[in-house]
Image (cartoon, rainbow, N blue to C red):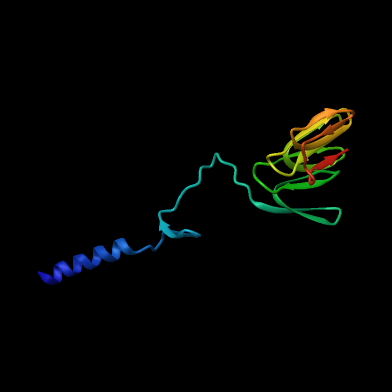
Length: 143
């Protein structure tokens, strides 16, 4: 009788403590093992990739390449614009009559007025220029 209980106990312990066939994930919080998780097929996964344009390698997420240029998102929240002047990716991208501009950070907002473009915080058109309280020094412009 003891042998039977020992056998059953060992079987149950071995069966439930084994992670064979399970997927384990290691992150900064620890190692987690369990059932295979299915990813929702409706979501778009963004992977790192690289493209080359005029012997220059550009890497990021969801890269765009055209005859006139190439660029990649550095964040999944960025957008890209492609026109006859090239391709740029960034935040709050705007395009108007051949001018395109994208901000380097999400807190910056872009404005285009006539042939002027700028990104920053609290921007407005004054005296023929777009002036901002804080300018985005790393904005991208296509003219």
